[in-house]
Length: 455
Ligand code: S3P
Image (tube, rainbow, N blue to C red; front, side, top):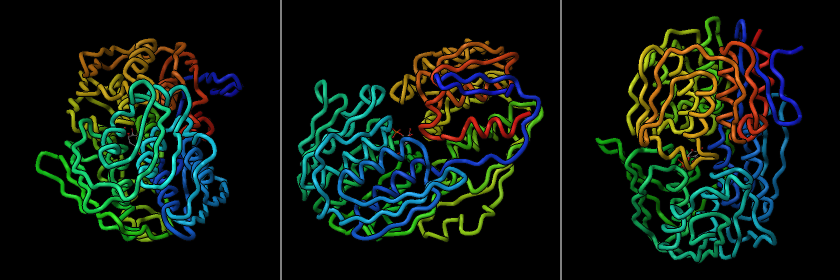
């Protein structure tokens, strides 16, 4: 009998591991993969993308490119990563889709395509699964409407599906985002491509900056200024064509964080991860884990061509090695929480094994992710024996606690499923995860890799 098992019925059973050793192969960065496909759609000609994520979210984006009239060929590598070749007629040659555009579970697809469609002369509907239909969209509808697009959402413009009628040229805006969000910033910048003049976005915390880097690399002037308080202002010039480019996608730092935590909390572990994206706006989980005492070695990426030089998009990457560590609790402030928003569930798991109290401040935005992640993480980790509570928008965890295998509900949320699976590697007995197949949203090979490196 294998120690871990994902049954066809969406349930994974994980037993405690004796040892974790080896190199884990990771998916391509999800955020960069989405953007590489979208920018290939906006460029007239042929773009190649290597090492993209094979997860369901990025496949949703590829499907939307096809529905809008681009030709998209894909080859899946042995490591599960995807090479795409996109041929697009460019923004003037795209066609109005005949059916709603299916974003599946992907908030990034829905919000960024809303910005793209705002600048295209057509009407399209963006829709997705039950989880996506429960996620807020007023945050994109308001700025895109003020730029001149006709855009509506369900339930008084609060929820998907979203119908967009593009009205190019759009009006440039100066927009301050109420909640730090790379998706909202990116939607406005992508609409700004098709606006008259300079579009400006101000954010209180500098969120992931892939859209800015990737637009610059494709010939579009984008200026960013980071303020002393950690906020940022980003400006884009409208009316400049996006150039085609060949992209190589680094491994996903958010997918890496599960393995960094696995190694840190397991008593006999050494896990290596190659060519992981370490963009300063994405590496917070590495730095927070180190602040907790995690032993994580970091050297420049060793795979030939894996660094940003190969493509000129300025995305740094590194090889990481993580080992068993003695962790201590820390206080994570609002800005770090915003920057590590996707890694907070697995950092909560790390905190259950850390000595002392960990407080994660201003984590309320987790309620608006693929599931209510605050409720999901507290429910799952409490069932496993952790001492974890919500205080307003803060998460408070006291450790270390001994985790005991139990039945936990991942709520069909990939980041919860993977967090609970890693917990199962250190918990006594067996951990049974309901909704485990959701891991394939961002990392289809997660459970195979887990099986391969454990004993
Ligand atoms: C993403 C931005 C974040 C993140 C999501 C990916 C992106 O969402 O949680 O997984 O690629 O821009 P928000 O912008 O809603 O914080």
